[in-house]
Image 1 (cartoon, each protein chain N blue to C red):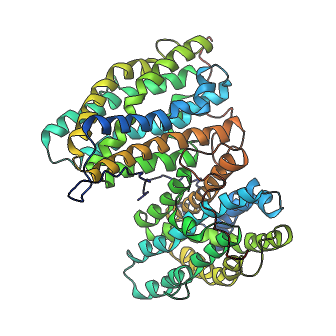
Image 2: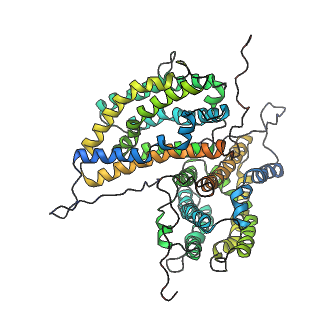
Image 3: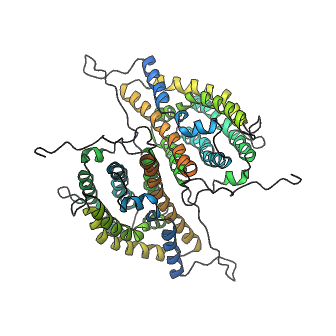
Length: 267
Length: 267
């Protein structure tokens, strides 16, 4: 396993055993991890939302971020597969429903492919995962396996990057609409929908972590899990930056011109 | 699992079933993967061997590459743990012995720490794994898990990047000796030793793969495994380049000045 580094505050108790942080203090600690490490701080996002990304940089982002999107329902299924409490399974299952949707209408990942189409990519190419950078796969796989292998509490804590997502989604919708022709209600439907879906997941997940991290050791592990997850997100943008902004595209990864949608008849 | 992309040559047989490639042709295919994708082609290595790396870039390489070195015996133990044939276990075990060595004298990973010391780092800091970039861990973990989860044939095939290692080790020894004051027989002992250790591993591994990949499907899987492994190595250097040559050091990663050895008494 990847061992996330934990920085443990240590509150000595008269009995000699470290006591857990009070609930509000522990929540503040989790939020501070987002304030310091969430990928809204990454320069790629400033570039994307500020309109400085070239069309091919946007495409590289859409292709690589697909790897993350497409693995989220698998990650949540890995979580479900380990939960003995049917009530927790029922609540958590809604995440899979949000992302996969129904056979006919699809869900979040199909909405991501609408974005792919809007930026000129062939949705089937994007859905195939071809051209995704190995570094992206390594980071995303690390997350899926973390959720599969680590204590349930840590797995839920890792999902809490969702706490910080509504802000970046709102910034993204505004920035993309302002700067890019492809942006409209259809192409951005993934982000718009997440604005209403994420809060219920966050409310549940945060309470779960605050309730179940009832020792300092568990709090430390939960904080380390959230920190690990910020690494998963950050590493994806570092790879994008190096591969497509700096132009150091690794072997086997998408090159501009590949995977484009065929011109529409009559277009 | 990470699904390495396979590019499958397709030889149609009169019976309608694809035939395996002849042994020599399949070996040439494996070697071609190295010629096109091995990390001797990465610009970081040209920079390192050509003497253009700053001391801190060398240190970042030593710190991050430790993550890879330190996981190799764990990777080989994961392989051993799945092998039913005691004779294969006996042969493969020598890899763990090369890297771990004995309790007193140590092995390859201890020699790596001699390099850490020579470049001014505290070997205990390097051995702790603190400061390793998340992207490095994700890539290395992907390799360990590949060997743990995938068919044994694919796991052996992934090890065949060793075929291409003696050349880069010789280049490295020559380049480091020429350009850097820290380079001497002690600090470079890891690479010198690998020059004699690697060939026996390669000879065994290559024959194993050529013998056991007896269908085209298995050959394709073995080629994909080797290609995956080149991705593991390449992604580590991409992360180094972005983090320390471009200066986009990710949160939590080593910063110059951290983890330095204390000055020797009298020095």
